Length: 286
Length: 286
Image 1 (cartoon, chains in turn green, red):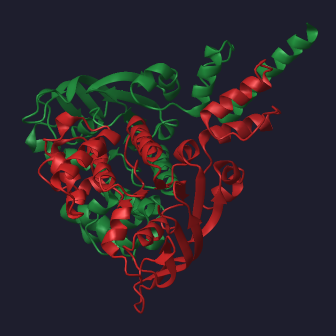
Image 2 (cartoon, rainbow over the protein chains, first blue to last red):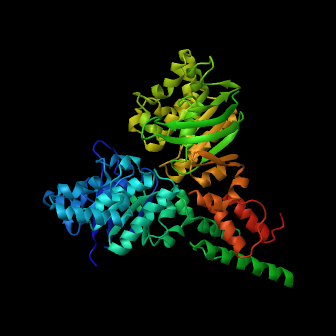
Image 3 (cartoon, chains in turn cyan, purple):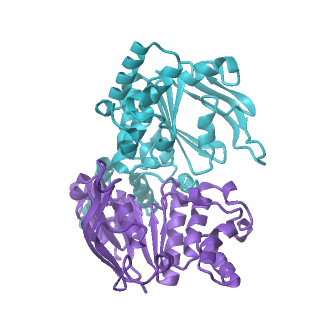
């Protein structure tokens, strides 16, 4: 299958910087997939995100969105409609005093007829579960609600891809859950490709693919379970792994023989309990 | 020494307007010198409103805040003096850096206290030491540093005033796991070396489990729980019902108990969980 976003040997350096923020990145994202990109502060993950709809352009190499080169200005409008971005701070992304006007902002700018705007706005708000709030003032909403309005604003452009750059960093646990389950649903039901940039490892567990970045390079790439298996490497990168993997890793280090990679708590608990029971029986037999 | 007593505290925003909203009510708390407190609660539960009363940044609508027995909103002790003794680090304090050099930014507080310049410089170095800011950074512009470094400079600026009580409103929000840990260790070392009271506002339960001695949980503007981590985390259902969760280690421990394993003692950190599993496995040291 053709990739929806593809990086070809991309190198990027900010003007006046003395080092590359992205070095030789080659990666493709499958249409309709849920991708998480994990990395410590300064690892290059936001820089990578900004290459995906031409906010930043490669110093070397190229980025293709649905086959269109982001460096070609003729494609810029179409690329921006294909790839929507949601940023960390919801307060910086809201432009109107009424939720539905805010969501209508992008389609209005695209010159879409007003009946269709109405329909797109209503649909977008329903998809993020904010339809009842369409007449509310955005600044009086909670952080999680504001982020969902920001996502609706992107959805109203009917993009194929949504890139979210640490969308939950400023939210409490409930707000985080609201945002994460909303984007999972959009991926599943609307077949929208999701690229979620985060440093909360627990938001990556249910992704199709997890990419770990460090110093401008991709250092691990695979299914979340395959990536989290590298407990020591993740810790070196200053990242966390799920508690289940950490406990299994430490127990195995102390001589247990448990499977190294179980993400589900219940399942992990059963493995540990079974292993301890077995040990107890052996002790009795002796 | 600063002992804080809060009596019957009530705060209503925008009194007499259609936006009138009571943020906190019926708060009675005593906070002793040297305590190590985490204030927990979801967004909008009143935590930030509460801490802004502790150094007279907000005045109560009703009730009083006493420091060493004196009402800080009525007594002769100046507000300015209270703000030096009770230091408050806001959310995202890195947006408040404004001086041309790191050194000048950290020196701003102590200079306002009209200390002799030699002492100001001593305090700058000492505060930079507490927060792990290398001397080579002191002459740089704070604006060109990373997010985690900026955050530590902002904290150093408050520490340089030698507050007897150091309050930090979500000091690790938006930082990656290793950056968060670094900041929590910096705060711990300030407390250990000076005996200051620490109050951290957070919704990160893992961090509260690891670093807090007393946890105060806010819910809808009132205190709903107040106790040791052991006491508070023994009410997982109540915590979930108010939009919080239990630490990851505690969740895994309860899954283990559900699969029939007998684990001893309170478990809410990774280390406790590991040693409880080892004991259940019949390790001789137990």
